[in-house]
Every structure is written in C-alpha cells, then in structure tokens.
Length: 381
Picture 1 (tube, one colour):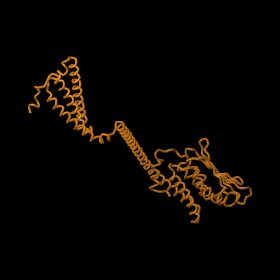
Picture 2 (spheres, one colour):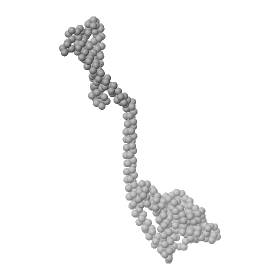
Picture 3 (cartoon, one colour):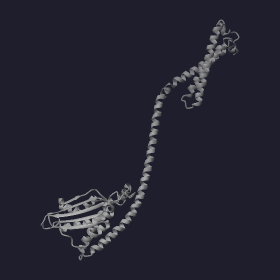
Picture 4 (cartoon, helix red, strand yellow):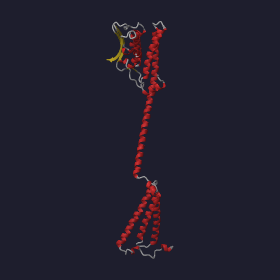
C-alpha cells in the first residue's frame, strides 16, 4: 500500500516546464484562480440550501457542490505538484472527483423529467398574480357583504322603529275610528223610523270609512291619494252612469282625518245624486273637482241638469247627512262649506286650510320594509 502513496521516485511537474519562471507562474496562477472559484461556488450553493430548505432536489445541488469542490481541489494539487511530485495523492483525488462527477451525471439524467416539469419563473409569477387578484376579489366581496350586513341591520332597526310607531298610530287611529263609528251610528239613528233606513245609511257611511282606511293601509305612507279616494267613492256611480260623471284635480296626498271626512262627504253627495239627480233623470251630469290655491284647499261637487228636466237635482231632506256636509266635515277640517241651488244646478263647495288637509311627511312611519312586514304578516286583502 505504501507504494501507492510514495512519490519519492517521481520528479516535480515544474521540471516539465523547464522551470521557466513565466510558465510556472502562468500555470500556478491559473490553477489558483480555478481553485478559488471552484471553492466559492460550492460555498454559495450550500448557503442557498441552508437558507432555502424548500428548494426542490436539494441532494442534486449538494452533489454539484461536492463535484465542483473536488475539481477545485485537483487544481490545488496541480499547483503543489509543480514543486512536489505527489502524483499518487493527486490521482486518488481525481478518482474521487470522477466518482462524484459520474454520480452527479446519473442523478441529473434521472431527474431531467422532474426538472422539466418545474414551473418557470414567468408561470409562477402569473399564478401569483392570479392568486393575488383572487384574494383581492375575495376581500372586496367580504367588504361588500359587510356593508350589506350593516345596511340590512340599519334597515331592520329602522323597520323596528317604524313598526313601533305604526303600532302606536294604529291604536290611536282605531280609537278615533271607533269614536267616529259610534257618532255615525248615533246620528244616523236620529230621524229614522225604520230599521232598514238606519242600516242603509249607517252601513253606507261605515263602508266609506272602511274604503278610506283600507286605502291608507295599502299605501307606503300614512296618507291617501285624493284621486284614488274620489274614484273609489264614485266607482258604483261610474259603473252605472259612465261618462255623465267627470273627475279632475291635481295629485294630492291627504292625511287620514281629512281622508275620512272627505270620504263621508263624498258618500253623502253620491247617495243624494243617486236618489235625486243621476238616478232620477238621464239629463243630469256630475262634475267633481278639487284644487289648491293660496294656501286653501277647495273641493267642489257640481251637479247640473238641463232646464226643465224631469229629475232636477233636489236637496236631501234636512237630516244628519246635511249636518255632516255643512257642519261636521267643515269643522273637522277647520274650514267651511256652502251649498248653492240655482235652477237646474246644485253646487257643494268645501274649503279648508291646506295644512288641515294635505298629509305631512313623518319619519319612520312610511318605512317600506315596515310596510312590507305588515302586509305580509297581517294581509290587507
């Protein structure tokens, strides 16, 4: 074994270079640069492996580092052999370098399919960009959902408050409505001798109130649209007499009290004309109109017939209906009423301050969600 490591019988490599100083320096300097570079590269690779443990195929990188380091060591021994003929040692190092190099080559070829499948930096950047966009979209969705939840919560809070207000208002209105019905029953009973007459007058007035209350309840606000109120009150007459009845006036939202009073007045007027006007002659026309001017609300019922017609408009016999038209309704609205009879024409004119008729905006009571909850839970059909 000693002869494999003994180098006493060999001559230094420098003798082959004839000990030319420039040639020896060139040879030694080149090998030194190669050794230093081949030593630095493995150190860099091993540092990367130490810092980035997730690098794929780390064993292959370690083999490359060993192979390069051994190559650098052979160049270092080449410098030594210029003066010391340690060729056996150099040979053993080269053998080790060859074995490691072959192992590295075999492993590299076996890993070629896996290395080819590794994503490129560009594809990784594209995937990262896509993921970043998806994350941003998810964050935006979460923020939008959070805003929607907050808005829904606020809407529910408003609806809860509105329902409380509407519940109190319903109790108040029901009390008022019962008082009105009681008064109608009492007054309708006076001056009537037959039960049928009382029931006809009383139930007609109650139906007028019920229609008004239903119209207000179906609205999103605590008010009723006057045009709808009038058309509802004249529906039966229109279905019978058609074009002989005309209605005109601006769109107005009237408050519940005004709606009730106007519906009662409209019922009395419609009942009278059915008895003494439209129902008595085919030459009688009725025009209903209303207007707002200079802070005053005016409601006019104009009933006309051709002169000498067989059924000219006649006044309703003095009773509760007349008192309702001329005293109760005007007083409830804070205004006054006038009825004129001139030949073939009867005009009823009701005038009141706008503030006592037109509905005022209220907070909360017109909440749409609250109205939907009431309609769904306590249907008005």
